[in-house]
Image (cartoon, rainbow, N blue to C red; front, side, top):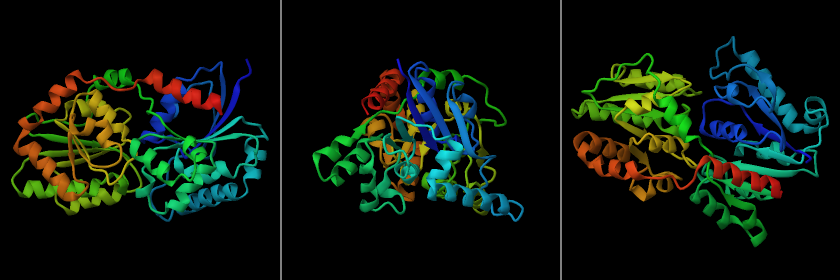
Length: 382
């Protein structure tokens, strides 16, 4: 049987939900059925070692993401930006030089930010596939007119009901509606459980003090700034607790400075990057999602798998993941909402007992095998 040739585009394999989901998907694809080239803008990220050997990894630049504007870093940062923008503007150069004029059956944008890179491909015969992980109505610059450009793809996979509804509301005919397909993210439950049993490194949990853990790339979307401000406010109100933030990103230094400015360095810890956050999940008392917007927050799947007490802002995907609030506390998407949710946990921890009972017997409405199978069907039908 002839293998289907697929080009996958993504920025890097840093520690984000979309990156983890992509690598999990690739690890569960049959190597005898597909020939996959994975093209990264930047050869970096914790998930690089997890890419299966049979996937051909290529890149435009090598090295870690540059998140500062220090004078010594600027030449390399500017070079990367100019080089990548040049190849975006003149894609024929990329396809001739880097991709050796290879003919692909499917060109696959693994995140919405690569919309133009795939749409501008010089390969007119290839099918175009998009995977959207965010509620684009909350992303700066994504007007209804711009979102409608995704209908130029042959198929658009979306990961939550809210995103699905957004696209259906913008579709102008049935053919456009048929391009949008709701799929569940493929995630490995057993891997999460196994890794959670590893020891915690470089952090000491205090069983007498409630700890809230939050995990994610450190940028404004995740709302770590408002989480820290709420933390300070609760401390001032006499509620002793700790905050543990796991993750790195371009906003890391700004959030770290805010932590110091608020005077909470002794009770809030920014752990930075860790390749295994699950032991920290397991030992913390609460998982908190403080995001301003999401698509379908993968991290809640992990918290549910580990049966954690959950507090989450009311963003896209949360009501689906938490079964309309039966599996965790959903708060208003605001600083005040986060404050009230955390205050409830600290003042009335028994109020989470009902969530725990439901989590104990809860079965996910999807599994890894079925999710991968569904995406393969989409690819095969293109």
